[in-house]
Image 1 (tube, rainbow, N blue to C red):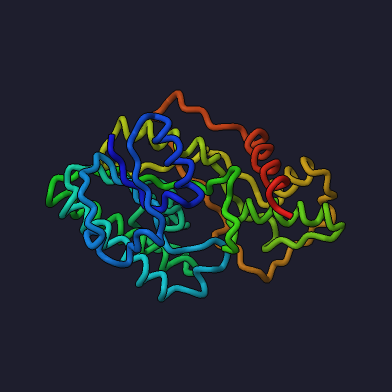
Image 2 (cartoon, helix red, strand yellow):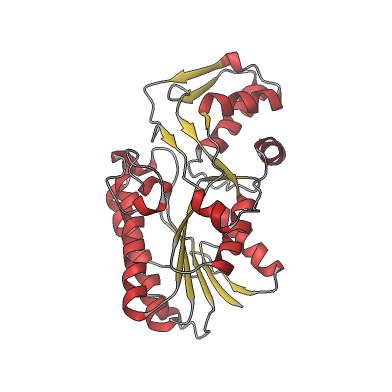
Length: 301
């Protein structure tokens, strides 16, 4: 197949592109400097016809980034999403449009099941980014209904693994935990983590996510699917696992309850995924941590 990927140079994108190429597909994945999605895509005179469009690109960062940039997030992400959707319906209607949703779009007071993705209210601190993802999904569904287009939307849990970005952006919580604990070990200093340590999270190894995504694409159309492992742990439990692996005393960790923590719990309902892919196996956390921690040791000072 001929495949177009936005965000192909990001953390998830690099794994997806590598996998697609290994499967024999022809993949175009321009960087943001080569294709500015804040401007109409057709301005770049892309003349190929694609079988798939994977839309991974979004303007956001982890941590408390969303608290400080809500207006920018609304404008920039709305431009990005509107331009790629307009290109899809106007120039690539034969392509199946595969996009990334976000778990923060869910109302934490409702079950995190696909039927609730557009229901209720996201948490206040992530509201703007969450709503841009809901608007993306609303646009996808509207275009699909009017023009008989095909799509697939997947909602990932927090992804982790090697080859995480080193460009100064804020890190997702699991990478931040590993970085801080390794720094504490090698510098002999105490570690400070945000929150009380009781907030709960779910992880999916990035390679597993890519494998599940590609398999889902081959089986279903015009649906929203959560991709989650179904297992969650507290931040304290994650920290203790990391400490055990790097031989750092977990008693030296201090928790700052005045810092931003996001949602208290975020575990996706994965019953729909299991029903579609009953034999799919996620990499166990111990092996995934070994891969990720070893990469950090070799790539960060």
